[in-house]
Length: 196
Image (cartoon, rainbow, N blue to C red):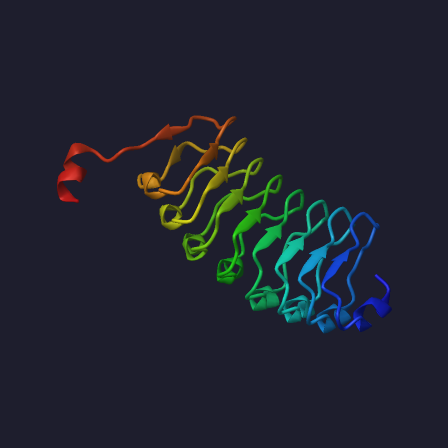
């Protein structure tokens, strides 16, 4: 990425996808007005911490790279609404991502995730979650607190059951869960219902 781009103080949208980029300069953090950043289909293995200084960022697209982690400073993107991380090398859902309180769409398809943390419940405004083609065996109980969720795609994992309170997702309109190993809905027993 040319260093000169970082000197464009009023830049709001930057699309440099499919350019075989291997790194992004630290000066990216100077783009205080940037709202849309498309870095998909490059060869990135890391991002600079300064990405978290792009405080106006609303859309960050990083699909089809070689990323296995994001910088801790990512939590500084308080206005981020869309984060696309599909087709990378993520093994873990970083708890720092759950601090992106404005997030409405999160795409993590085709990674190597084995589990999701309870902290995912903090993404209260999340409407779209795409986590197909990972290695998930279960969803956390806190998952049922994603009250704004409208679309959930969890196909081609190794899920064996849903959380008991999945019915709490009252706004869910689309659920795609094909290709899991033994997908069962575990409902509360009569005894458990009497306790509640």
